[in-house]
Length: 147
Image (cartoon, rainbow, N blue to C red; front, side, top):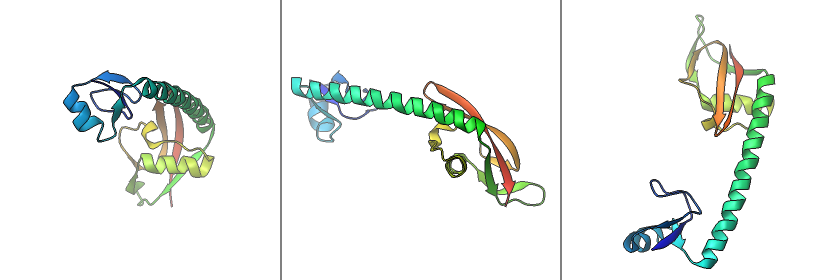
């Protein structure tokens, strides 16, 4: 049975792809859970249109992210956190706090999953933050200061 996936399905395929599955899997799992629709000519045309629109949207998002990364490289982003006298933070600064600081200080909406730090920062100082999303790579620096 041929079906067109409506969403990404792990180990099966991406949304808007036409795949071959067993009749039971298609009729009992994929179609009732709205993960796929039967592959008819009308459904194929709709899937092609949606795929083209999704590809265009991904391209626009990629270009926007590249612009945002370039703007972040020039911006001075400061994160305020509570710290003791030795400069150790009481609470670590992770992707969520970095994304919020980028939005607050530079007005740039950066997805948390694009921020690629090894582990959250637990000390005061200036740090380089690598950013990547798909084929777009870059880095910017943040300064963590005591409140």
